[in-house]
Length: 539
Image (cartoon, rainbow, N blue to C red; front, side, top):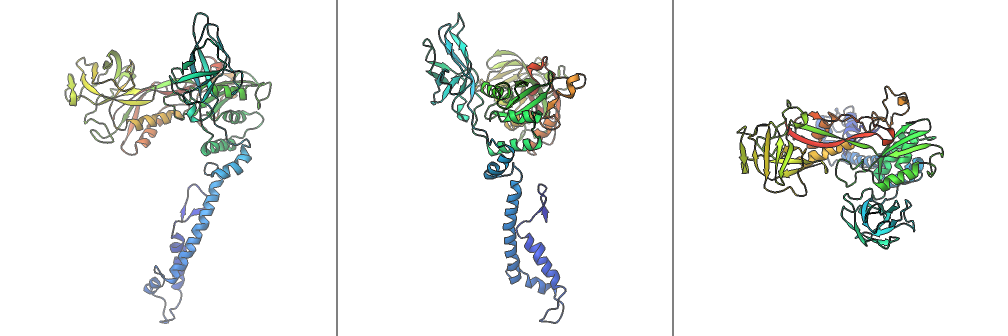
């Protein structure tokens, strides 16, 4: 019998009851009986003939096996319903939900962000954090969706532009307009305002569809694991997660300042947002929703006299140098037979032991600091097909971009001049960028690194060893329970798993930040390690 590691009862495969239970028992029984045709003990050949495929006894055992599998399927289905993350929609909504989270799944939310409007100095754009407020200024997007000003703003004297914080009144994933999208004023805007204006330099974020089964089940299991009661830390965790479906999770620091004070740090779901700070750049609408829900006296759930502060975490980018053992000059490995550059661990500072952009000559030509000799010639110039195939790390998007290399000149020994045939699409090389040898697994590597850092949580807000508040103001849930705060060698495991066997080994010779530092002031919120610059080299 095959026993599942995830269930406390055996699971039978098709034919297992027939062959290993029923027919086996029947054959053993026949061996103790006398064959009425011969008056002697049943022979093995006779037993085999009696129980062969298609025989009466085989068909009877097979029928029982089919009935048993049907019953087993029902039992497995029922067993799955006991765990929220395995349960189907009906069981979640009708059994687990009413038992653990009576308010049910969270509704969809609208995206929010920054837009720049133009109007005469002194013009007022009325805002409101209550979506749908008839007094607030409202604009319409190119898709007909409505966007409301959240905070009242006045055009400064001597200026004609003002930055507005806006949120979509409509909800869903389609309410996150891209940077530069045109909005058109519809209601309650100043008469001097230009009718159209653009979304700012960043996309709107925080717009999500209704909470999915997986997300609802995750909240239920968190409530089951961390029992909320009487305003304890688990209660604030549960309250924070029910503020908005845009919130990924929360971290609670009880009595961070004094008795009755609580610091709540929220992170936002990544969704379709790219880049290392998708979780930490919490949208204005999400943050306002959390503060309205958690901060007294307006909070509908927190006691009136509690002192609650809600903040996002502060990013502390960690620059990485990874060495990965991949095949050379092959599909699934390094594109070149002799990849360049290589990581030179003796170089100081360590972040320059690979190849770091030191200066920009033109849009297609730049200088990198490196002591890695060119393949085949050591020092000199490689051009055309002989030039190394390279990629560059785009920190803002957490992705590798392939470079169209024209030549690499390493005559300076401690630096190399790289010239491109064309500017990378959608990217401008900058000082501090890191160059790596090209691999066709670049997207898989980038996704693995992003997923690893998405699994980290913020650090502490006080020194737990020396600060007298350390016994009460520690992070909840603790790093040992969920979301470890320290980055390090575990990233190697994530990378090797993602590569699926094409890499035999990997190492992390350099990381600039392992653990988030303490904030200068608790009011600033905790720090969190995020993904910075990345270089990947042969091992």
